[in-house]
Length: 427
Image 1: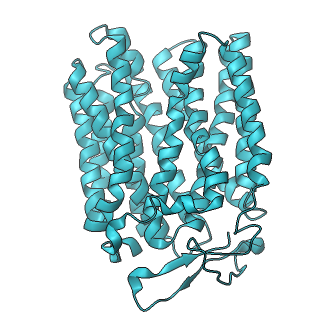
Image 2 (image 1 turned 135 degrees about the vertical axis):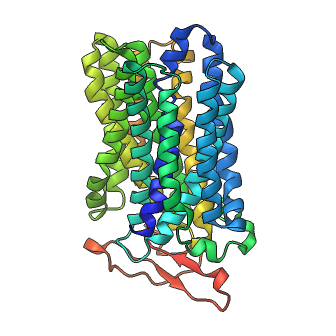
Image 3 (image 1 turned 180 degrees about the vertical axis):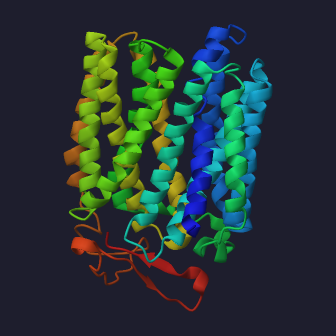
């Protein structure tokens, strides 16, 4: 097994554990033991653990190494499921379990993305970003799909899904336990790993192209499997259908990523533009679903919004990979994930604004905003696109076009101090 696959499996398992809770919301609400507000609180506790962990995990991974950090993350993800398994009827257990799941996710995504990229050096440009996005999408989609089916048709729905995740984590942990470290591990003491958290905002390409579209990554996904099913409940086994809709959304995002790779050979803007176009179509289909109150329209809406999620995830990570220096990549990826997870506020936004604006109209307005982002982000002139190639520190360097169809390749400048090596790109 290739080294990057081991890390991808770890991210897959953590993503599985993070999203398996979604279809089980119906189980807890129907049980009546835990109140509606308590279930909502438990769902939101995930974000409370996620955002700080995304930022704090970067210096921790730099200081102690990626391998040690990922070992702790896998153990923490399994402990979160164990707490949810044992204390499913207690509010403190639900909140604590979801909080730990958020911490595990935040600690895995930024350093894990950088680690996969480092282990993918020498492969096609952007391969590391695509592999990280694929691993996350497969985990996010597989978790709710399997958990929903198990909770619908097997006994003990508050137990069996978490037990499956614990067993899956136990199978993957030995493969990751001694995985090779990358560049970050070799230079993990360089400035405590804080570089990249703020440096990425120094790039116009990030500020005006990546940052405005990042919230749509999970904004589109949560609209599909959290907003639309609540407004237009699916027929039949509702728990399994809820998990299936989440799985379909995120599986569509994973399936479209090979196509995103081919699009990137034409233009570095292509993935972002097509992702935004899919978002427009998805929000309009969502409005039609609400207007007609037809659960069958949930399927094409889920697929289209999933395509938006997958393409914008790859577009954002690829751009971050091209802009950030090697020892800044983990922090830069963490910043991107923080911005993308703002999209989890979409269900709450629709609920609150829906008191004054019909949800169908709100989704049409969302489609118009996304449509405006296409020219707004494409016309932004950055040093990489309009002012000549440059590094994140403003040092001009020559860039080649050795990638497929003229895709810019990255070159590194060697300094006397290897820890201060920089990656440069005109991508």
